[in-house]
Length: 395
Image (cartoon, rainbow, N blue to C red; front, side, top):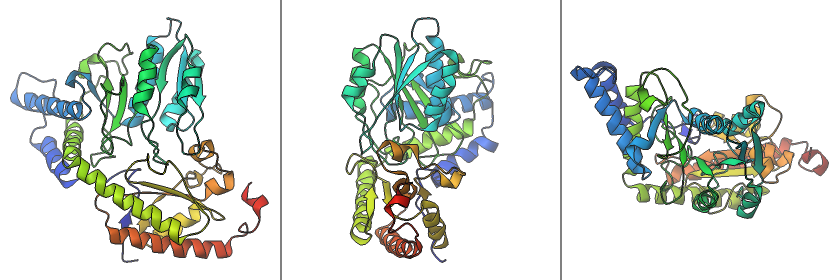
């Protein structure tokens, strides 16, 4: 194995050198506590945090006072749902609308909130993973307090009609939360134009460090504080700020803004090259997600008659890192809830692989991936006991 090719950038990304260089200063040079304002070291740290806050705010067309730093996307999702639920606890509002393809940070939080009498409606999606706006309107009740829909799906890359959903929420006076963890840096986000009230973000998906994210909370939205203690983050999330991580988040956003359109155009070209290469060279495949309304770096296929876990193991032997649309690798026998929601049968869903590319990837890398997959799928299908048994395939 001579080549090492990382194609799992939806899971995490390499920390960019510029980001790391900026972060290092705040470990050993500007190491003050941002709450210690009576001396320069503390003021330097506070200034760095506020500069990052403004950078993030500008990137999504928000006010800097509407940005709150968190430990990551899952925390932001939890805060959005729990914060709105508990803020409305005794006000006759106990209903949330979300979709069947959300990240588990949303789905498991909705399940948790059942203990407190909070009901959730889970919207279906079509074969592309797209929400039906008419179904959304029909699900709205007088007691609906929150609509939570992810901007783009982390597995299949489908981009939802966020602005139209925001208009529906605004028309009915319902708070609108968007999980934008996968979308940040890949699509243009405008919280004002898209009528977004709450937005979850994460740094490590865009070349920033792990362990830091953000929440946009529109001014005037009533939401419970998430961590009680000190006055950090305007009293809503207590705890000494991880200055170095926040600085890294800000720097990653700054870099994402540079040549945004050019970068997205290039990634889209590489994505389409990979999609066409697989479709033209490997039979019996299913492209998961919308063919065009998808993230510029996402390619997710199901390969019939084979298991995703076997494909991943052989890819790793060839130096390619990817991920499976199946949950097999986490010890579960059940395929991805996202793929099942789009209508795939269990057998086909189990044979899914997601490639997510970065700007480091070349056309040569894409072509190498196609040729490698062609050999791997042919090899596995030769050994497959279910290749010619449709009954087994559907189990």
